[in-house]
Image (cartoon, rainbow, N blue to C red; front, side, top):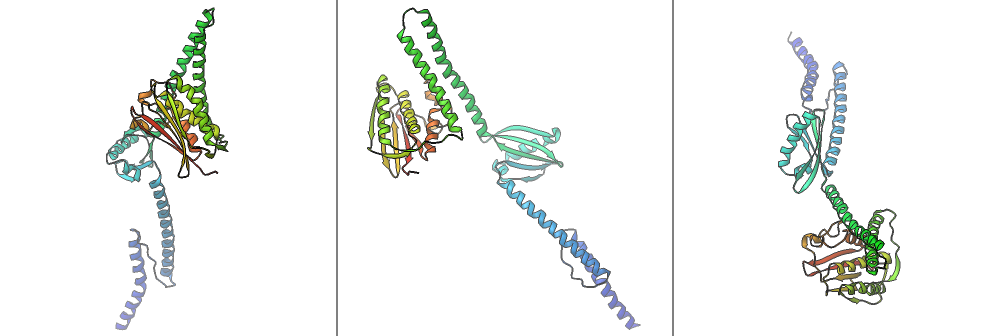
Amino acid sequence: LILVLIVGFYISNIITKPIKELDEAAKKFVPGNLNYLKIKSKDEIGSLSNSFNSMEKSINTYVYNIQSEKAKLDLVLSNINEGIAAISKNGEIIFKNPVIDSLGQNILETLINIKDSCFKYGHVVEDLNLKDKIFKIDASIHNDTCIIVIHDITSERQMINKQKNFVSNISHELKTPITAIMGYTELLKSEKEYDKMAVEYLYSESLRLKNLVLELLEVSRLDSYESKLDKRTVNLSQIVKSIVENMCHKASKYNIDIKNSIEEDIIAYLDANKISQSIINLIDNAIKYSNPGGTIQVKLYSENNFNIIEVKDSGMGISEEDKNKIFERFYRCENAKEIGGSGLGLPIVKEIIEKHGGSISVESELNKGSNFIIKLPQKMD
């Protein structure tokens, strides 16, 4: 009897051990602790164990793939420029990327309010002013979760405002000469004798209109993919000398003196027409914004592998705030708005110089004049 009990206990242990192992594995299975079972019996329990191991392997593969895809998604969402957040109906932040964090703690309260509106209306689009910036918020519901995307539209809004200001400025600039031309035309129609002064004024205003149109066309060309530089080897010294001689006549009409210091025989590889246009524009601005009796200095010299052109005036100068904006399209300085102009001249110069691989900067102080400095690389490529 004792022998039978011993044998029975032994057989029972052989049978129940793998069952217990399966039971323990099944209990750990729910929390996700998947471990390989080492049950080598060839009976039904062994077969069940093999099935269990196959299932464990498949699930591990699925889990790995899901975690891998999640890691990729997290990487993408963490490195895009838009802020992204996912919020549950009860206000739990399921996900938010670093852009959201960079907007400060107060943004979370705003997002919760947007979430409430989103669950109420299904879709919310609104603007948010935060930290001197403008953001567009787009929120919608997906799988009972509010997905919020925040996009920085500050630059877009600034461009729209600049375009509005440009339309206003250019309308004024065009209206003034057109009105004058029409008025003097009516006067000429009524006069029997030749009015030389009226004709000269008509010519002057017509030339002003022409220059405005040319600036607009130049901006259009610079924006075009077809805009190419016609670079050739030229004597830059001769080009600058010729420009100064021609501009002296215009400056003398306003009792402004142009002095120059031009290094001889500087040979450069560039688009002569475009560079000439840039220099003329700078000198023309210097004349326009200088007081009668003022002086303009034009320099050309070589230094540290650059050909440098300077145009310095003794005019009204530029404030620190305006110095950072004068090369933006359509921008007009506060102290120069009474003087005609489209706000396109300096941006055109900047784009031409940068297309040559160079740079332009300005040194200026209010009521003490300005010095514009062009640097063109000497490298002939």
